[in-house]
Image 1 (cartoon, rainbow, N blue to C red):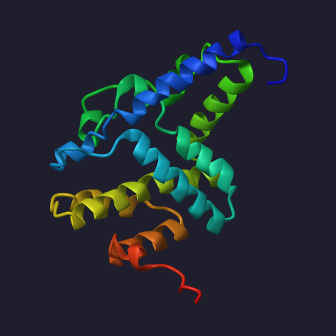
Image 2: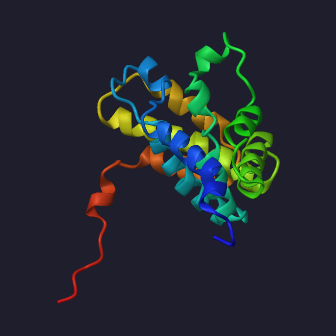
Image 3: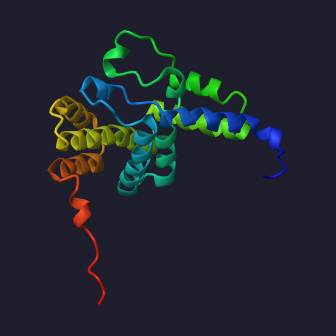
Length: 196
């Protein structure tokens, strides 16, 4: 712990407890599509982080940095919830950077700065890692919509179309093409031959 006492980590502990709310907070846009029990924000962020790592590895960006941006990009939603696209037309939301500053106000300078910088980088969308992370965010939404579609939900087409239209990198567009052709359970048949 490099000389830090337990009390000096109280801010970080509070932040970790706060972001646990994302495990219980649902992605509200899916309710509009008729999904009764949609994924949580944390579930979305988890697959977004892995998706971002994969995109970055093909795009020449730093996969670890991209994955971190993906992991943190929705953490401000502990304080404002997941506002669906239609809701953003009616609400003036506080900037994620401002929320992150409040969330990390009691964290150590070093931890707080890492979190704030990552969220600001994601929001600015200028670095190769942020571009990959933003594509991962949209691609994960497309993947989730495809899974819901295969479960019989027919109202998710516009989520697929809008996510597809938002993708910027060649890798994300290529992955989307493959996902749209794939059976979500095809992975179940993928395994190495048994050694006998």
